[in-house]
Amino acid sequence: MSGGYDVLVLGEVLVEIHAGAALRDAADGTPARLSYSGDALNAAAAAAAAGARTALLAVVGDDDLSVPLLRRAAELGVDVSHVRRAPHPNGAYLLSADTGGDREFVYWRTRSAGSTLAPRHVESWRALLTGSAALITSGITGALSPSSREAVAAAARLVHGAGGHLSYDPNFRPGLTGRAAARELLAEIAPLTGLLKTSCPADALALVDTDDPPTAAARYRALGARTVAVTAGAGRLLLDDGTRAAYHPVPANPAPVDATGAGDCFIGTATARLALGDSLADAVALGMAAASLSVSGRGGTGRVPAFAETAALAAAHRRRWAKGS
Image (cartoon, rainbow, N blue to C red; front, side, top):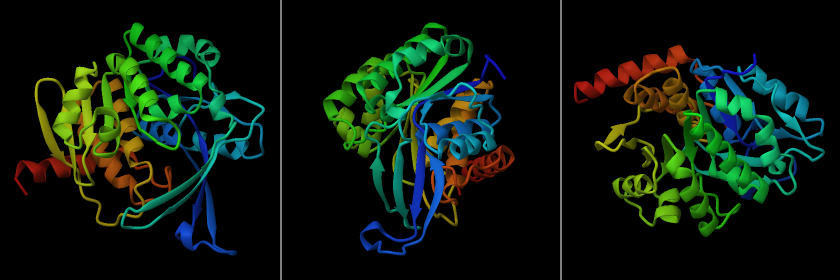
């Protein structure tokens, strides 16, 4: 596959180590499971599952884990032929999660391959970025290093200038960046963004000084974002498209396991469906359904629902909502 993708995802891929106990209780002999995640891979996997021709734009390392990492991405339907290599280790994180949604993370990112993402990589992907329908990227990618920040901004400008769609998740992580730097990047990217997905209160308090979802959406739109989706707890999402701001109930998952990557699954699915021609309402409904289904798995790519399942849940949820139940 070359050129003309529905969705490109620019960002970081991580080795995921899933601990079998709370990190504070971990001891010698605590079991762990190895997998692969990172917000870029999570979103790309969701976009591919939603039917989009999807490619990953990332830099991976030269350690032995790069082969299974890329193999896993390809198994998820993501084209990895444009991924670049760097003589650095892959980033990794240790995750512990419980069914109540509490999660703990420890990251190893210093001098990782992913953090070497730079404008020169973006320039090498110019034809892809200007010839594809949509791009997904995030504040996490922009916070990895100064060169990564420049890469995110350069890619966003290329896609916007070519008339493509940009989806952006600020995904503020205080361990990676300060509020001032995150706000600066947000101010630069928001005017180029067709869909901005964010969380409230976590992102909103840090980036737009509010814990009120409608106020947060209005402030993101004032920065230039065309449409804003605000996740406001496990059960609802606020969508503000400039004509109205309304809450939408998220389909309930009766057997939640781990919410890691649910937001990435939402933005990947919604962006894919927008790129494929769905209406905003339908794309968001499908994104919510996919995100809900994803929490039945462990880790960022532990449960990537097939589109038929996502569509069935979205349709059933729409019928229940229409009946007022």
